[in-house]
Length: 122
Image (cartoon, rainbow, N blue to C red; front, side, top):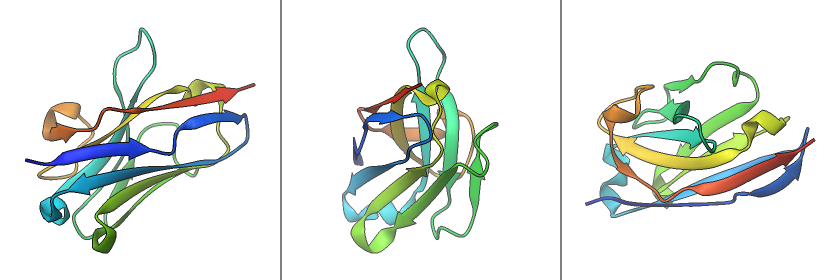
C-alpha cells in the first residue's frame, strides 16, 4: 500500500512560480514511476508530467514544455513539480500518482494523492 500526500499549492499571479511536493510512504516509493495530473472544475483529468524510477527519463504534457519540471529525490521519498511562468489556464487541482512505468494516461497509475489546489490570477 502506497500513500501519497501533495503539498505546496496556493495562489499566485500570472508569471509566478510554485513548487509542488508529493510525500510518499512506505519506502517502496522508489520502486514506482511517478506522475502529476491536474483537473479543473468541469474538465477531464489532464496529464502534466511523469518520471521514471531513477529520475533519468521524464515526459511532459502538451503546452507545458519548458515551464514545468518534474524531479524526484528517492532518499527523501519525494517527488516535485516546479512550475514557472504560470498562466491562468494552469489553475486546477494537482494530483500526484504512482505506477509501474511512465505513461500519460491515468489508468497506468495505481495510487493517487488527494490533490492540492493551484490558483493562478491574471
